[in-house]
Image 1 (cartoon, rainbow, N blue to C red):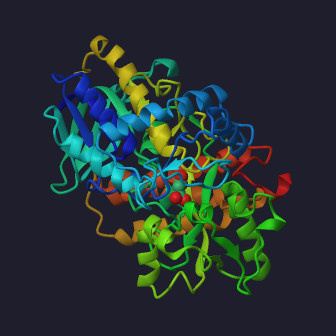
Image 2 (tube, rainbow, N blue to C red):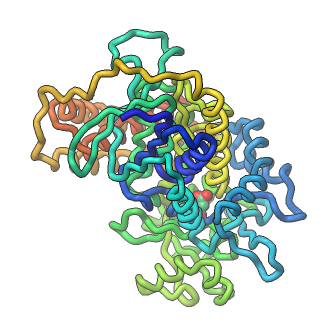
Image 3 (tube, rainbow, N blue to C red):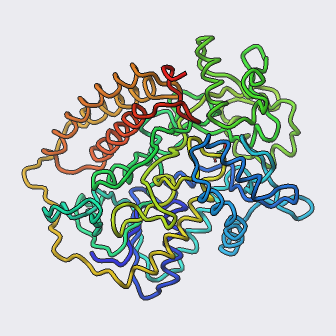
Length: 517
Ligand code: SIN
């Protein structure tokens, strides 16, 4: 298969780019690949909304200051200013594309508030903003004639010069497309592309306990790393403070931070509040601070969860803003107006990723990255809540603009060999994969979580080395399968998180090592 543009991933970053390039170039071909179905993305689960300055009391300066403060000195200020100032334009564009945001009684945007924000500035669609954005994007995409949507296709690897057995200086490495596996027919095939965008989202499944869906196995990050793309600040894993405590549920159901913005309080079993001991902003301190505070309280008491107290909140308004959360709680027997909600932190977002410039270009020629898999410099050491949908939308547009400049100068690399599966046989032993996955997730939860230490990281690395060796051996001799590829990708991402953690010599934002206190 040959295509002008290859897009890997179908969340907000991927689909925004697809729509933009498809509309700019009606005569060029675009292939978008997703390993699941339309709704299988983190975007689809995003509850809170999009942080965009709207209110007269608010300003770009205040949003910039909040983002820099949350990022704890590691944001790229130029990027922060650019993304935030493009917010209102993006909002208009999303609305023109059919996204519906909630309005208040005076017809203005109903602006929510989340941790780390000094003003109400989160535009939202009830408590399922991401699903509403995804709905509008997919419906627009369906009107485009030059897009081929490959669902249930797994991307095995990006193609670059090393597939031609050519040694080339790192700065000249180029991406020529990808090898794909059709999950339904088990066939592998080659897609040659002129430009490729990675929009594969996060890697929450590396931790097992996560608010992210099953598909978040860090495939894009691992593939990019394998062709030697630069990866940055991947040690900064954001843990969402308030996932619903419901053992065995994957993904963990999120109790949006907007609920705390609405007035809910974190309490212990005895009903006592505790956030005032940790930060003057209490429940609305930035996420790293709230997650660490909960973790400290849990460890101190040997308990598994704390509670969110919504009992004093206005029933009617709560129901209008948070219908999904209310329904979910009801389904597990909780009346949120009378009962406390049990919550605990869960892995939620990777602040670092594939390093990109202001146009979304990676260090590999003709390869772009956008959304959670990328590192733009916006988030620094801790992402400010609801900044990521905005970042994905802004950068998808910038990637599309840059792509428009480049596309005419690129031709296909026709001499790429097909996927080589010589010497491999089907493995009947899925237990080898599932066991190693559980082991990986346990290592990451216990040794590379909210609080780390030199010893925990060292142990994590030595255990990962064994998992890596076993999985590589299996990979070399087995017929390709999505489960095996995902495990391999997750081990790579885990390795990157651990080694980047070991290289960090100062606690910052979401990175906290006991030996550096
Ligand atoms: C939330 O609704 O709490 C999540 C929003 C985000 O992660 O930005």
